[in-house]
Length: 123
Image 1 (cartoon, rainbow, N blue to C red):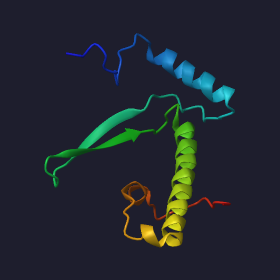
Image 2 (image 1 turned 45 degrees about the vertical axis):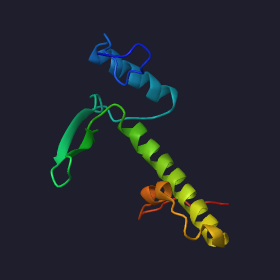
Image 3 (image 1 turned 90 degrees about the vertical axis):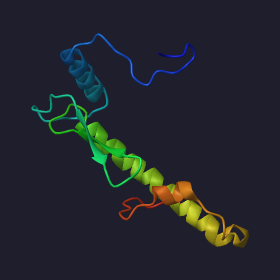
């Protein structure tokens, strides 16, 4: 049962798969995103249980093979990695410059850390 003022994460819609794919194609064309002709499927979602954790957690997987939003997903990943790298570098510089923050933990930035940074900050 849903509370009156709560926000819905998912909502049932009465749109066909073809209408969704047409919407994706329109968006891609509007933004100059070119897809191969066989990229005409919707993404599929799967989950795998992480049985080594208590309580059990799940790893969610989105399959983008031949998907109408694959190129958009690739571009968004690149942009978000760039932002993550920039934020991590700024946090590291702040820690190096301010001795009073040396014992302060940055869990948000630690969680964002990555081993393959592909973007360089100019600041």
